[in-house]
Image (cartoon, rainbow, N blue to C red; front, side, top):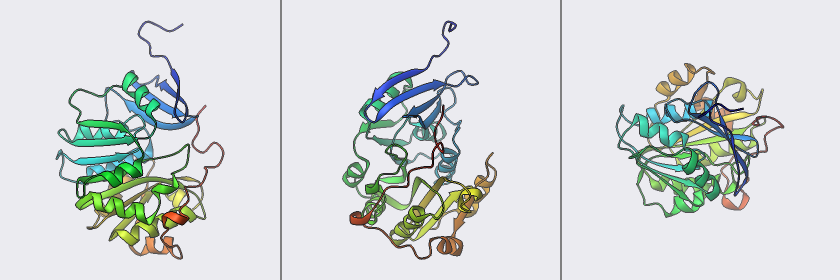
Amino acid sequence: MNEPGEPIPVTRDVDWGTAKLLPDVDRPRAWLLTVEGSPQSYVDLDDPTHLEFEYAQRVAHVLDAAAGPGRPLDVLHLGGGALTLPRYVAATRPGSRQRVVEADRGLLALVAEHLPLRPGSGIEAIAGDARSELEASPAASADVIVADVFGGSRVPAHLTSLEYARAAARVLRHGGRYAANLADGAPFTFLRSQVATFAEVFAHVCLIAEPQVLRGRRFGNAILVASQTELPVAALARRAAADAFPARVEHGPALERFAAGAGPVHDAEAVGSPEPPGGAFSVG
């Protein structure tokens, strides 16, 4: 029997399956969001700067390095989940203006009801298709674009093409940065094509991932970062190396060798990221 006030799991059918909010027994107001058994987000309402997922920590490194400490940013988030990274930016950079695009209306409603945003967060969450909303965004309107869109456990194909990369470049301001959460494993057909695609549009590209993933020893997440101006790879490498699960920043000639033989993909031939091996991203 639950004690009075003790958080209990929430289960609800949303547009893309069954969503669950599972309380963290170690943190009083922290929740794990899963959709169809796959972890989507982790949020601590008392401490939005606490990032449980390694990939979220790596995206946060990109956000932290995007401007001087505390300086507000204009951020476009493609994919919302439980709004983990928008909450992080609101907490670390007060006054930021953030727009979040989430395709699942039911999920947005669930999050708004059970994990409400703090007043004055500066976060606007809307229902829509990430590519359509990106293409409708004004030119040079974002300091950072964060792409964390998964249909089930796969990045949708229409968010992987040269045309999509060009749309992202148009929306970013000079010096702006694009950061995408991707997933792949050896032989990295998808990830190598993404490096080639974004390198066709952006002057500077890097990958942040665990060495085990980059060596092809397991399937996992990789953060692709792109900009028209030089990336702070040394600062990103220091931050990533200090994580609980240390990551490496691949860039320059090493990244060119990684992507060797891969070419950019257009809309007509674009494919989504591969299906993860059984159990790679599932819980309970």
